[in-house]
Length: 384
Image (tube, rainbow, N blue to C red; front, side):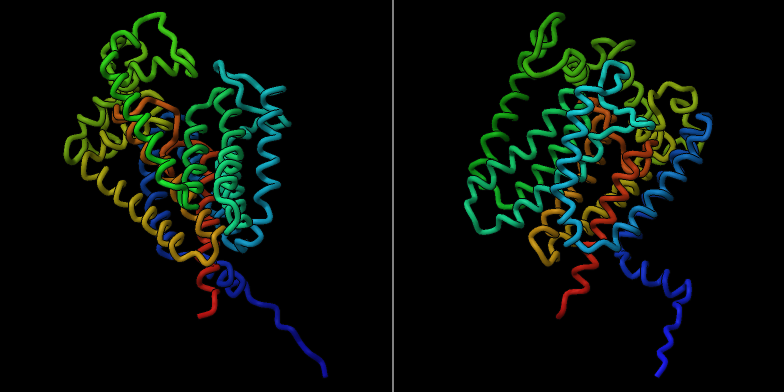
């Protein structure tokens, strides 16, 4: 008997790939991508090929997302420790042989210039989710202690570069895994109270702490300046306070409905700094107003809600912790960027997902959403 295997058509092969896609999550991502392209076209129209490059980066990130969505969570778990060790090794290489730009040593030149800290945004939640999965039911206090060590090593290297924005993201995703793994509240409350006390003391003694020549423990002078500028941008309106003041003017001038697409004066007269990257939210707010911001925030809320739903329905400890931490990463991206541009948080150089220009950050988002879709697919494949 001769068995003939029929070669599947291109449509069938494509359908197999598309079955890995979580449709609600994909719809949310497509809405954010459309808003991002709209915002980039306006804010980057005179920045050479930024709009075209932004679209290309989105397509590449989409391809990465579809590929990673095919990878079962079990295989992702096997990659966790090797990726983490590779990331830490690259951070050590940056410390020893890194390329310096604008006073920061964050890059490696390996024929192409790469920023290894971006890898840790994904590697840290992967390795921590793997750690709590393999240590399930063992000695909790030791598990949490070693988890903090695994988190603290890359964060310390990234802060050393210095790159506070990436350090915040890596720290947030790592802490999310540790928290969702069951960190006792008695260990959560004291640091939160200490932070509240520190903020109150800063507000009470702002004039003394922000005076010229005063040094802050563990912070570089430019980081201290950013905090002081947040408290009072008018302290140096033409210097350190210029960026945040112009961004706040742009957001306020957008009003309820905005000035209209391509009509933002603060944007197109080049008053907004970094209007295609970190401060693109100010440009978007000026042209689309409060209504546009509500639409953008609603899209983010939908994506975050879907991400946490995937985490809640995940079949394993590893999948649950990974999905929750990746969703927290997207939340941290969006919240910190909008808050810093609005003058609520200090400027830390965190891009706004899908809107800000940047290929590396876009690839990180593609990886994150691909992993979320992989976890959602694994849940659908579970019997019963």
